[in-house]
Image 1 (cartoon, one colour):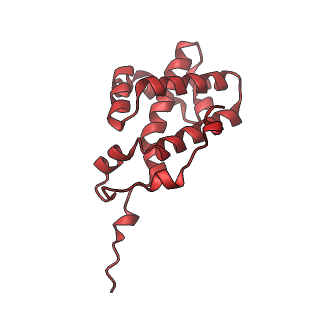
Image 2 (cartoon, helix red, strand yellow):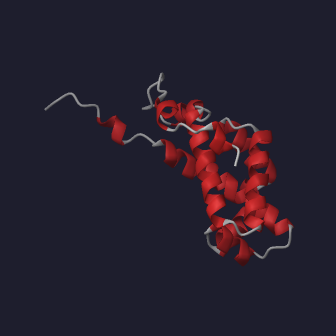
Length: 150
């Protein structure tokens, strides 16, 4: 038997980190904003690709309150002002029905979070198998300045 370290297969992959943490914050805050603007829970569910009970949870469960979500955002290591600017862009695109542009912007944002290493400290905190000096995402998820300015 070789000395292969199989912990790498147990590691939380970077995109999973975004899906489990950042995506939930994005969907929660968008649901709350759309609801305040008069959208129904069912309409919000269709926009976000979640169930109506999930939207209800985003709106009513205290763990998804604005205060708790912003606290979570800071724990992850994201700047609330930058995040709010990003959400404004997404809301603009959603309200105009520009689905492909929403998807494009979400992918660009996710990849820029990874390439800038903004999630590294959080990733290493929750997953001790990530090497302390890991910088792989800065090599793999390059985002052009031109693309970011869509």
